[in-house]
Length: 190
Image 1 (spheres, one colour):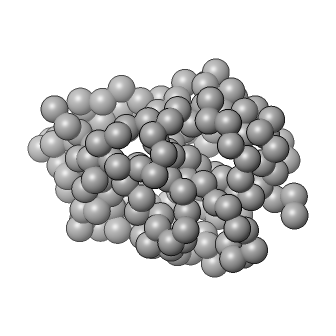
Image 2 (cartoon, rainbow, N blue to C red):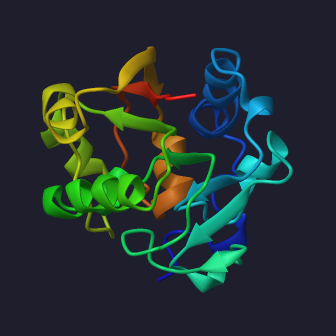
């Protein structure tokens, strides 16, 4: 079963998808000056929907069905960038892998990282809705414990995740509406 929908991923028309993949991205990008960065990577960039906002962004993803610019494992990807964007990726990684990811990016010499990640205070509800997938969902304090201390939170918004989102994303006809929070953190050196 193709739950991620390959190149169609994130392009659904339900209100949650529009909020997650369009509206919050626009709001977060208003808070930082993207134009000052030349070489920008979208780690876990899937099908490149971030190119709608940053046309020259380089998408790196392990899933070739999403047709990223570079098919590679972001945890071991060796390239230095002016800015790495990690958007809705950490739930694909266990805690050890998250720490390894940040360490590798910084070891590569990248000094600027934008992290965008949702959190769920009702983890039981999130797991109940997220059928047909295996993920590592976290609440706010669990996420905060995994990211380096020098990241500054620049955005936070509570949203409603609709049952239509789960139908589109996971073929779940029995999704239950719930709340989650979209967070953005920035590590910026220059």
